[in-house]
Length: 148
Image (cartoon, rainbow, N blue to C red; front, side, top):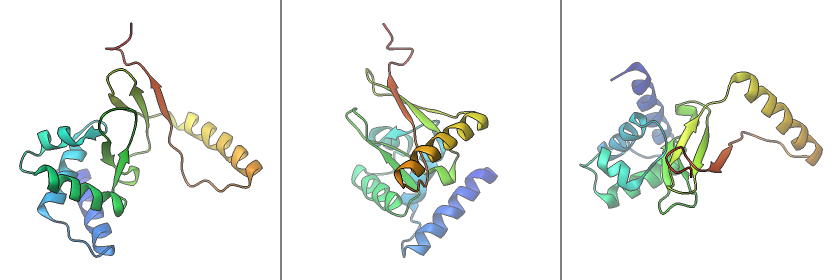
């Protein structure tokens, strides 16, 4: 296990402990599968990556992990919600979402662009009396495979 994955597992275990939940074998399998992917995945994709998980167990484990804040559920216009590890376990990123095939791809912006976006969001938030905690940007369109 890589040091990064070991740290993810420590953080997840700690978060579950803080919420009086156990870090079960099924939850560890979910975290392992999500840590191995390069973007958000659907429940069927998760089960393909962790075939020992029953679908009902995967749903329950995802719900608990989402509730304690270590998994993020993305709901777009596709047939299935997609799941990924929360950003505090990975890195800050955004998504490219294909409206044709439903694929979701993670993209990371340059630090300079993120600073500029944060400044713009701070300006808008201040004008509205709003205190932001974070941001996400999802771009919708067509992926390279689906472009006409």
